[in-house]
Image (tube, rainbow, N blue to C red; front, side, top):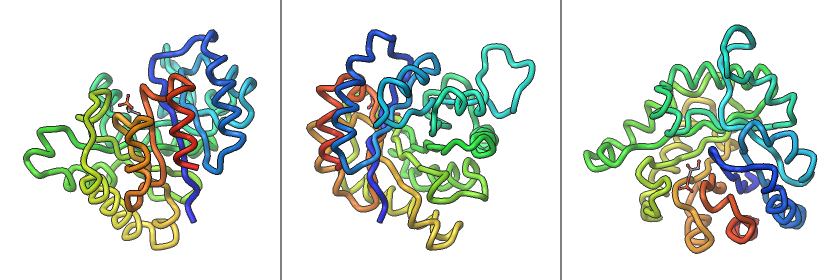
Length: 245
Ligand code: 13P
């Protein structure tokens, strides 16, 4: 049985003043039957790790190199050292803003694993790609190239995030979500074998909120959510945690 996961991605939001929100989320996490994860700006990892012992902390990116002359970058080991257990890699905003390719995500995933972090590798199609019926080809290519060979159910989570659903209030139909999640599961099983393929969690992300979480949560092969805007406030995120528990 895969344990459900309610993961928040705070993106470039959050100051120490927001720790009060996290205290309320921690209470919900303590009572929940799912993993509750907050991927926060690097500046907050250590504070949230201290303030919220029942919430698992994560980062939103790491560099592919172990150390060196890369001004402004943060290594996987540094993230781990700050108290994080997970790191989001290949988010579509980083692919768009920073030109990250599948090959780069592959290197970053290896760096994360070498440091002992678990990777949440993001895949997802643009609206044009969906309209031209290329969704599964795009997702298949992203999975094949972004994920290194040594994936396990412990070190990898896959997040399906349609680019057009992120921050827009739009969501795919539950049939569309199910089609992609079933496809991801099939590709994971084919590449890594049934045991590993069945144990990797697949999260849905893109405009998930307290209203739509209950119908998305029951879709085939949806093991939880990667939540942006609705993870910033306890009043939005706690109902999502409860629904996924
Ligand atoms: P929203 O939930 O704000 O659409 O963001 C989703 C996302 O990008 C999570 O990584």
